Length: 319
Image 1: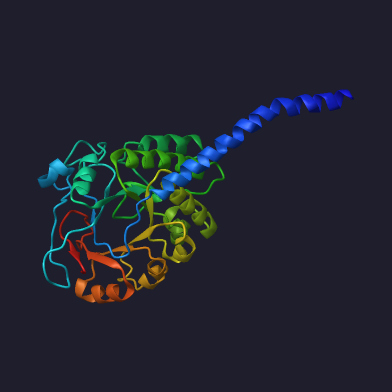
Image 2 (image 1 turned 90 degrees about the vertical axis):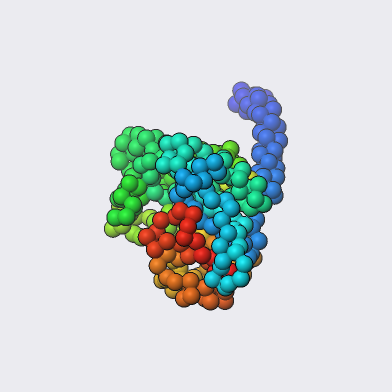
């Protein structure tokens, strides 16, 4: 046997045990992921929901969330209660703590009422008031100011569009940070997660400060859905209507703002046809104008405040 052949044989023998160990480890990881996804909560197609991202001091004991809300729907009759509460990961700092307290109290109260809780997380813009904000700033500065873009809007100047490209590892870093947030959703006991601001490609560089392709947005959004499922949570697609058909297989339900106002709700029919609910909210449009349309499309629509605040009230479900 030549020296080269001996060296090859030794290398093969030394690597064989590692390969034998790696295969079971990979299989175990895959089985764990499948088990987590198998236990993911999936909301029924027709589920009444409430969107309350801002706390109310009257309900400090339940993390600022009015878990007993019951209102007469647009369709009339007796008052009805939400079966799904979409609330922030953290308790409102004006009500409980200082925007760093996981809203476990609200989640427990929601569950005690027989309802489910969806964890609101901003995945596409970086908010200054979040406890992990300085980590984003530090990464941005150490990587050529390549992460934090323009302010989200005039109404929300305290958050900035994130760069989800990966030329300097931005997407990898964002997904690492999102994983930490998802872990906190799990820790707080949530059933699902809403990843907000996942449509940078639709807005363009003039709005966000970054050039994001549709393909890049798909990669990021699918990675978010996979992340939620690996952690045992269901995942909501927030807006991004232009890619609804391409993402319906990855997400468990959709959350939308104002698609009736802008005559875009038809694009969400792919979710309804797939047996996946659409949780929808209007602010400026009257329930009498959008509720009949929501009924035809099978969308779970509600009316919230005209000023875009998301407190417990006003709240008017269509049915």
